[in-house]
Length: 332
Ligand code: GDP
Image (cartoon, rainbow, N blue to C red; front, side):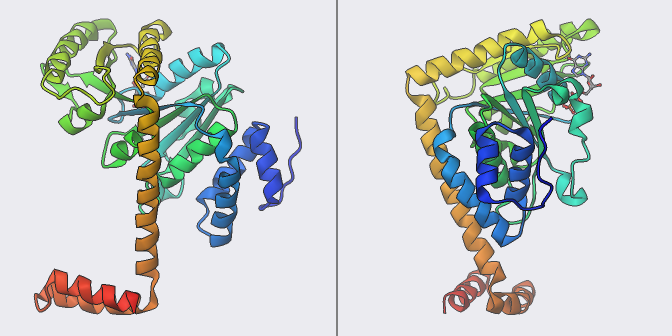
């Protein structure tokens, strides 16, 4: 086993070489550096990422979402193992909304994906959802780029289907998979129209045993519902599958569709057009957060904000006037 230096912070070259050699330990350390809130760490991480940019962009980026318990980690475990069996290196980034509160993942990814977490071709890492400024998605996207530079060929970004994280994930992935469950009755569980519109494929999971008939019915209903949506920009109509995440063979058609999607969108130009639009999106997203960060950390703003807020609450100052006043203070 390779020996690694134990110091908390290493020279930039060491991180760089580690990533370029696909060293998982060094990849982990670099991600930690990237997630650090210390400005000097962030600067180093930015410099690193900048140097690594030419080696990014070569992976297939998959977003997976669904309500807790729908079978996301089981599906990733089974599909991921299928891929590593073919020699494909896969990185899994799980956005854990609880991580801001606990300071770590309470979902325990190692136990959620026991086989994959032992697999030398796989890398699993919880990514903080973070509600601090710029935290949502930005670090995840940067982590994804680092994984690409380290040679991972498929990057899965997993998010629990709550809140805004799935829209963010949609903006950083090539293909978006939504997992649903069929209820014991007619209804589909966890179905939100907004999320359905983001999906390139919808999978009704746990289609095994008694549940098969409900899953088939749900598949039919979802297909009908999809007809009401406008055609996607990718020009590849979303497909609806039933699966049992416990059975590898039931996931193969899904993987084949993902590959077909990549082929077709590469041919029709959407794949790279979308990537370019995403680059621009993340630039604007980051810029916006930098501005916000700068604004709220500004001494005068920190002083004035509570007073202005009080007046807004009491109705003695209009929201627009208050905002304008603070902007002037910030810029003066
Ligand atoms: P997640 O919260 O979406 O990641 O869901 P998990 O993958 O942890 O799955 C929740 C539970 O459902 C676990 O006990 C799994 O073993 C089980 N499960 C997941 N997929 C399937 C499936 O396709 N069929 C059946 N019968 N159980 C499943």
